Image (cartoon, rainbow, N blue to C red):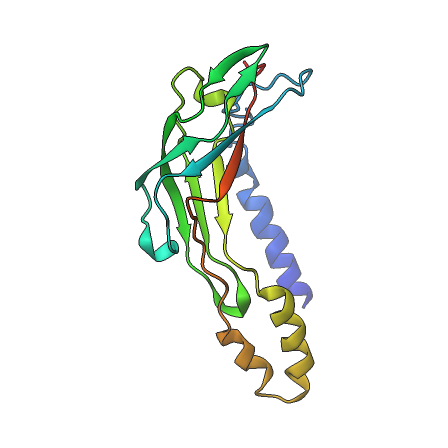
Length: 176
């Protein structure tokens, strides 16, 4: 046992000079935050076409949203009601075993007069999370050896988005 530990220590010391070449500079952040300002303005939107579930979309698919209400900042209308907002489906995650839900992530929202760095980058839509009752059931059934494993086949809910659902992303006007 002591020989194995000694071998790991020797290997670590031999490879230590390799770690010296790793750059220590941190990359620049994507967004420049103004930490003094907490101003955020909600933008309420609806999708223009129903999405039944995650199998009906693909990554990179263009989608459009419609702004539900006027968006005001400093007494001026920044985005008018009815404005069409193009976006993309960024990520599609199918539902998993043990009740893990499906997910669709929308991103790349393009507003006419707003810098993309001043809005939330994504909006995520989840399906029903069934793991909250599947995992306790799984543990309760483990006293009967094969039955706990049967809960693995319970899938999570599908992620869809209907035209009557209002989503909200935030606009941060004071961000640089």
